[in-house]
Image 1 (cartoon, rainbow, N blue to C red):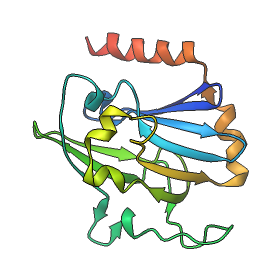
Image 2: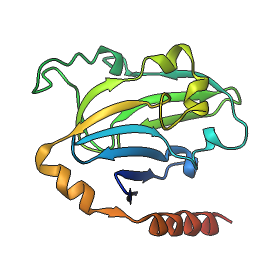
Image 3: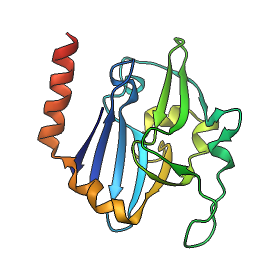
Image 4: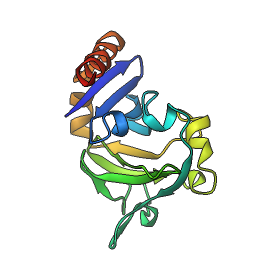
Length: 168
C-alpha cells in the first residue's frame, strides 16, 4: 500500500515493501508547476543505521534504462510514462541489501539525477536537495486528485508510528 502526506507544498508518498520501510520515498510536490521531485524519505533505511551506498542503477530491465529517457519541448515528448509501481532505480548498499525505488506517482519521467551515479554519498548527505532521484510530471487531470489525497504531517507521523508498533 502507499500513503501520501501534505507538508505545505510538499508531499510524502510511502510504499511499504519486503524491507519494511525500504521503499519509503519523499516527494516534494510543487502544485504550481505540477512536478514531483522524488527523493528518499527521512525514515528510509539508507538514511538510518549508518548504511553505505555501493551503487545506484537506473537500468530497470534488459530493455529499459531510465538513463535513456530523452525529453523535449513543452509537451515533454519522448518522456517515459511511469505508473505508481514503476521502478525508477535500484540502490545497493555495502551490506548486500538492494532497495528498489518506485515512482509512487503516475506521470512522465522528466529527468533522473545522473550526479548520484558518480557520487552516491550525496543521496545520503543531501537527500531532499542535490540527492534527488528523479523528477516526474503527473498527468494534468490527475494532479488535483494527488494533492487532495495527501495526509497532514501529524497523520503521516501516526502512520509511521503504527507501522513501527505493528512490526515490534
